[in-house]
Amino acid sequence: MTTLGAVWLGCFQPAAAAPASGWPHGARAAVSLAYDDALDSQLDHAIPVLDKYGLKGSFYLQLSSPVVGRRLAAWRRAARRGHELGNHSLFHQCSLAAPGHDWVQPHRNLDTTSAAQMQDQVLAANAMLYAIDGRRERTYTVPCGDRLAGGAGGAGGVDYLPLIAPAFVAIKAGGGDGVTAPMAALDPYAVAVLAPQGLSGQQLIAIVERAAQQGGMVNLTFHGVGGDYLGTSPAAHEELVRYLAAHRRIYWTDTFINIMTYVKKHKPWPPSKT
Picture (tube, rainbow, N blue to C red):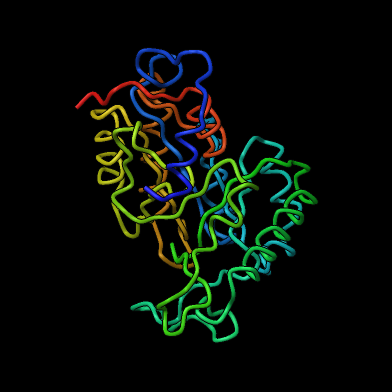
């Protein structure tokens, strides 16, 4: 757990007790379906499927993406329908020095961007999001999961998340298998997330089933759905969404901001079921 998370846990005063299961209405797991980078395929395929089954997702917009400006009306409609528009920074800075990051543009290299610059840009992105959906509270997803800004060759950088954390309800910041359990160990400013690529519907369903067995939370962050990159097929995505909609008593599927607002309100969390 980060120092920031430890401070948060130490100063929290619990509100009214959560249900025995931990989740609303006795659900056995919470599911956050998120989508990064503001891609056309998310507007064309992901949102219509979520709307079809009455579920809400979280869409993390890279505010410099041409898809934001070109399809601004569509993003506004998504927000009005209850989907979350989250912050994914202005320019999607990632570490060029990280393995497999040769695609990172030099002028958007986190290794040569200071923590203070990232703070300025992320807070500016919040202001831009307010202009889109009129909302003040926000969550953030760290581009590539890279947190160290201004490090020469990716080393010796400064973690910029403590600078921006006060502006957010929660932050998705880490990799992993997508399942958070036990919930009592959660750091709301470094929530682990899985970015599935090429998984079948049954493989995706198996992930949420594991979360239900452990009484935890699952965070899946998709990119392309039936297009763009890091793709998931429309059939696999819809199979997962259909399954979650058919098992609402087991899975509480909601936006990340709603889930994390609930989690923070109901700390301390009940013991793990495992």
